[in-house]
Amino acid sequence: MMKALEGVKVLDFTHVQSGPTCTQILGWFGADVIKVERPGVGDATRKQLIDKPGADSLYFTMLNHNKRSIELNSKNETGKEVLTRLIKECDVLVENFAPGALDRMGFSWERVHEINPRIIMASIKGFGPGKYEDCKVYENVAQCAGGSASTTGFLDGPPLVTGAQIGDSGTGLHLCLGIVTALFHREKSGEGQRVSVAMQDSVLNLARVKMRDQQRLDAGPLKEYSQFGEGIPFGEATPRAGNDSGGGQPGRILKCKGWETDPNAYTYFIIQAAVWEKVCDLIGEPNWKTDDGFASPSERLDKLNQIFERIEAWTMTKTKFEVMDLCNPLDIPVGPILSMKEIAEDEGLYDTGTLVKVDHPERGEYISVGCPIKLSASPVDVTRSPLLGEHTLEILKDVLHYDDSEINNIVSSGAVGEVNKS
Ligand code: COA
Image 1 (spheres, helix red, strand yellow):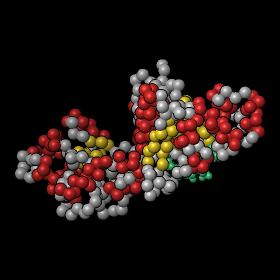
Image 2 (spheres, helix red, strand yellow; image 1 turned 90 degrees about the horizontal axis):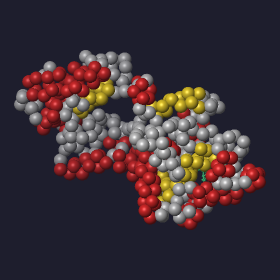
Image 3 (tube, rainbow, N blue to C red; image 1 turned 180 degrees about the vertical axis):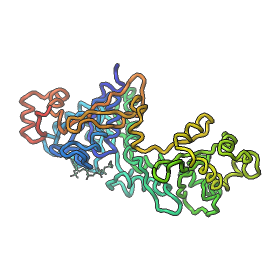
Image 4 (cartoon, rainbow, N blue to C red; image 1 turned 60 degrees about the vertical axis):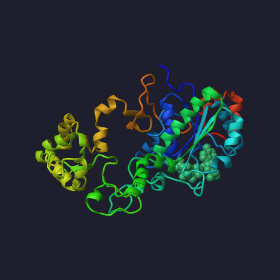
């Protein structure tokens, strides 16, 4: 079966997490992703958070499936010639270097566009144009600068970053969408274009509802926030909402049976207006269906602590899975707090390809997260990440069509690493 992006060649000049997540998805959709890495060094994550001495780290392998690796020194004159040839051959160039790094190498957008007017050049930077445009940025900086951290955590605690990598992987996803949109545009126009995504902007996009709340503050307190019911005044900015739901339906994380010893024996519980009566029956408070102060959603807003304490007294008598089994048939939205261990052991996720087991020559078998986007006509086969420079020779020969003597000259110039690794 032909893959959706078959025939698309991607010059992958990305490193660490944000860029690699983007090119990994392009690879999963069938693009030929050629990862350019510094000879002898490679992507810094190859040797970060090492768990098996001598082997590429899980940090690297889990972000670089379905790619080929060429070692190429892009600061060496011959290396620049090889890179120029790669730019001519490829449809997309993706990079997430520090601001100005590509220009310093001699490959500004203007130069890249001149070499190949059809190429799409896609970049991730920490900030967009403006006072911070020259900053180097990592995940948590973006979470903070994008408004997420100030709205995460509890009211009486400091700002919090989240475990989901919304700054890096979130930005990679945004970039990926920009690239396929530009490829679609190129089908009609024949022209390449520049795609730029700033990590701050991506995080802000994902924290959009918090900007909604910022503006709603002008009209008075945010009644669906717990702090309203607790009588705590609102300040000038969207506050931290603890585990309150981000929408109009009140929700909380509640203890379940075993919480004293299991840090994840909790469930999320939403008291959606449409199922309020069923919730009352389930927890043994049938009078709340009609009692003054409880019957309508607006009346309940200042009693959320009391209501959730009562629901928690019920959830604490059940495991998080029993809560799910009892609530689901009643359409009461609940979600067990699943640990990474529980997720790793969920056979159903392997059946759908959301989790995959991958074999690696240095590591042996490991678990990875597969492609979360399922295309019926373009199923994903996850293949292991490349070793550093594993495909240097293959790419010089088959993609760039250098002959043997030219390859010898390239090797002796020091532009590429060893070429006998394939
Ligand atoms: N051959 C020769 N030199 C290479 C090379 C290659 N194949 N690949 C990279 N380099 C060089 C770069 O040209 C740069 O050199 P310069 O500083 O002399 O111009 C150098 O390696 C370092 O690149 P840089 O991007 O500055 O890496 P860093 O480790 O110092 O910074 C980041 C890392 C992530 C902070 C930075 O790249 C960044 O801010 N990126 C944009 C935002 C981003 O994506 N952040 C999230 C990452 S998950």
